[in-house]
Length: 258
Image 1 (cartoon, rainbow, N blue to C red):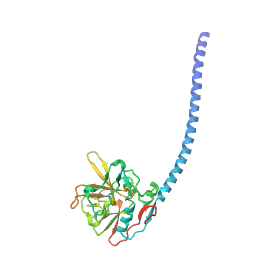
Image 2 (image 1 turned 180 degrees about the horizontal axis):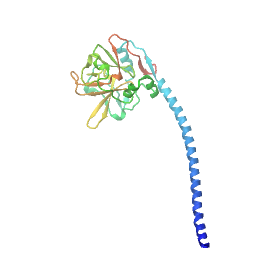
Image 3 (image 1 turned 30 degrees about the vertical axis):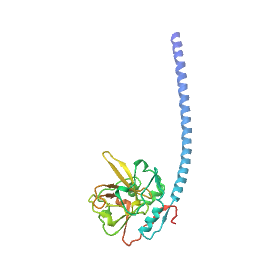
Image 4 (image 1 turned 180 degrees about the vertical axis):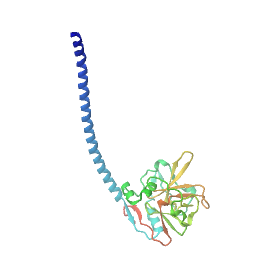
């Protein structure tokens, strides 16, 4: 019996010591976790404040300017596009005549570049409806045959809903029977910026407004003459102004118009 008691005591001491160490480690872990959580919380607050400051700064970097015609709007936009470079190449080709072969098409990896007009995502959400935000800022696609602009063919100009930049003319609109507003070319060559978009079996070309990078749709080589192009555009990304109507306000960097 005495031997058994000694054996039990011999075994019990290491077990008790192990339990004591385990409890100590657990308590230390809880303490460290608490400290880390508090640190992360403070860091998050600091990051949030910094993000808020950046958002306010970027929002102030864009301002609305009243314009009297689409030509004036296009010229003001062009002034902010002349020196924009992407990997040593111009973002867009500044020209008066549209040419399919002379379009500047950029690789997909440059899609996240800083465009001339910069707004915080919070500001974009305030300016756009949820569906418009999904399409314009998240490269979404509206369902076919849901946009009333698909069946409008009266004379007028189609502007970017994101910036008010003139994008297409009714003169270049046609019925592609695809369910989306379709055009054979942009209203000016520099109104649209192009980016390759990888897919499973082909390489599509995404089209965006050149001032803000707002997603508009895609361009395909199956359109009618004279260009052979089909600019397939989401109606939610456009504002249609009938001929003689007042152009929307143009969003440009700062308030520089001269």
